[in-house]
Image (cartoon, helix red, strand yellow):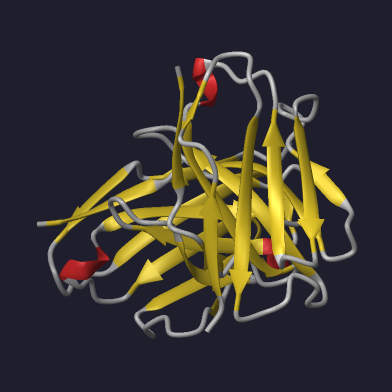
Length: 108
Length: 118
């Protein structure tokens, strides 16, 4: 099983700041099969990024994904108050599909 | 616009079987190379992949649940279903159904169904 470890656990930043979220895999993940999701309190997750770097339909340009192999990054270029959420990475290339434990983004 | 709607009992007794269905609106469950997925989330915790069923009917399950889980596709009603038997308190969670292309992640989600085992 591929274990995904996300860091930091919590990120507290001010509006307009840049947020960098990390997802490290216990073994190599094909980039095409790495996704990022945003989950706001009380809601279902929303797909932000698939294939490590492709924004899903309707996702603002301030969200971007990068990385390959075992290290992947989600960047929010300028934080907005509505970006308050927990962010999960997921690999869906190797069974069992797995999620990271999540990074909580707080807005100061 | 494609939407998913999950349905099923919200309260299950220990040792009983949970049966959930997910109705797909605005698209066919037969659309090519799609994975119809079940994911759960205990209160205050992260996401756990339960498994998925492809439009071909082939399935893939989380090894930790494999002995208790089954998924099926109902093309006549445009639904897919989850069965999880021998339920315990540890299975109490919000259960999400989701869908998406095999290569693009899960971009379709329902609102989630809170299932309590008690």
